[in-house]
Image (cartoon, rainbow over all chains, first blue to last red):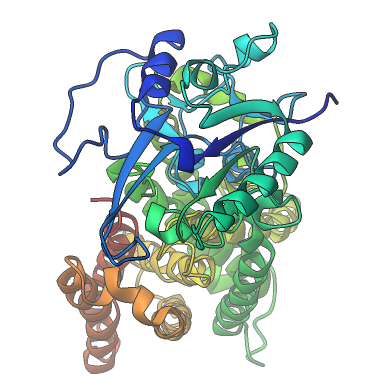
Length: 262
Length: 274
């Protein structure tokens, strides 16, 4: 396997220009969507089957050290989790991991069962009605296989989105957090950088200026498939109880009628 | 913001009919193997009911896909930790069991009956699986309520048993096979599975705590309390208790159990998706 590639989104540098969002649409030919009123500058409210990069505009009351409203920007994207719920859920093998560690959906294999949609802890994967398949960020799979970075990272004018080898980016990100803390951003923190942390680490990880929950990110996302062993055992327990109950209901009790005549 | 998979009416019907198919089959196989001569009719009805139901299940599942012509792609992969993957396989394998058992149940030869019982013993496990994996599938998702309802598979299994037995009861009644002593045993089996179902339902709601809101106090609460708890569990018990084994009352109770089973799947699926 090649060295794992990653995208590091440093939200402290984001100016909300949405060049990433547009570049993503253009390169991936994602098509037009009718804008929706979200109460602010953000469009759309959530990832869709045609929006893989999404700049979030977040207002945090009292978020600034002096108690003023903090206006936070974050270019959000599929996290390409090292332990990906969508990939584990996919029953056709359409969702696969590339040699660079990214997660991709093979559009020719997906049959549209939509289990991946409900298995993504970040609400990224979306169903496309016209193709009947699941869609999400491809990490510009075609570009990275031809030596180009993802379109969003290429378009970003402030290097808020950086593309590179994961281990390099993690080191860089850690330094950046220290710098920001020195500048007074006490809540500056990395999200998903730790490969020993949740979901085995995210291959698209973030630098946040506030708590993850402020950005609508789960504090400690869990791989959905972690439930399967216990839940199956509970079902087996139920099967034993029901099976025994039904068996005792039908069993002949000393009536001399145990013959198995068909 | 998390996304829901839009598993709507086709999947509600699939969960409901799959539960009946699994429940009817394992009830039939248990009655066939451990019951007496007068339970033969129960076994035959159970086998013959599960076959068309599982066929309908397959059609519902395929129709719900985004690209139905690619349904065979599920059979190129087997992930033993993935309920959707083994579920797709199990529907197919269980279908084979219902077919063979149904064919053999039409024969009166003793050797074929012996073979049918042996096949039934193995098929019981697939029946259990089909009735319960749909709940495990939901609790292995990232969505609140589903992912926290860890007893959903266990509950669906008990509900599959009660609805499967209720369906057999109704068919026996409608085809004039309700006269024999087998009726009381069938009713007893239904009561046992309904008690287990009620216990699991209470445990599920209690364990969910505040997470049970979509069921017990949300938009679907009326349907949950009235349709599942009332019509589906309490009223059938009362009917059977006061009905004193009157066949028509028993059949009515069975019909209500079926309605309760449908409401359970409907509320669980739709309450967080609508």
